[in-house]
Length: 241
Image (cartoon, rainbow, N blue to C red; front, side, top):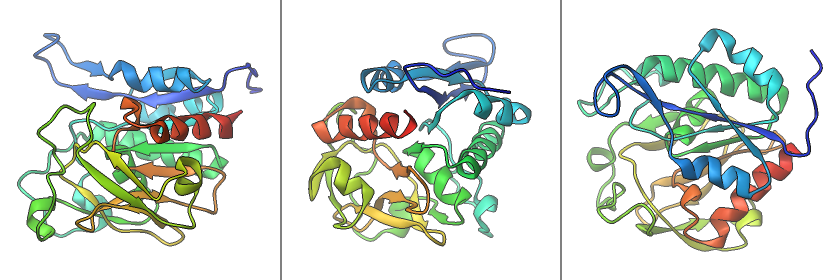
């Protein structure tokens, strides 16, 4: 199939899912508007991707870039070889199966890929890495990575590494970010580079230099707390043009 070219790159955005209750009496998908808004502002055309693992390749034939979002979920520890499972871990297995299939397919195509928060964690696992299952239990004197203040405000700073795609995009050595996670990258896979770290040592960003654009950030740049957040989306969309 020949993909129709448009002036705006088609950016696939993964959805979160919830069981019946709350917004609907039936199971429902959800995504914050600012995910799509950030893509549109950067020059892309956002396309939302329901969880159909068997159709992952079909989706990938139609989009130009992939963004794996965050959400109220954790990656199953069995997927990164853990023998235990922390009591706080809450998985959404169909979502993870779908996103993992998309991520592997995007990497095989060298398609621009951006993982945000839980999306970074999933990306790290797909690339052969592992995760901290619960930061307060594994990181001494950890910061409040589940910040109490609103997500459109900064929770802490991150330091960007000198020789990285992320630093070249953001143009800063230190930047304030929001924080909404209890898990984090533990070990990275082969060929994966850590590009951002919080003051307590928690890994806040990763990238895979062997690919055209493969970037993960632990915070939520779609809230555009700083110009660097907006620059991340512009670089992502530009890589798909």
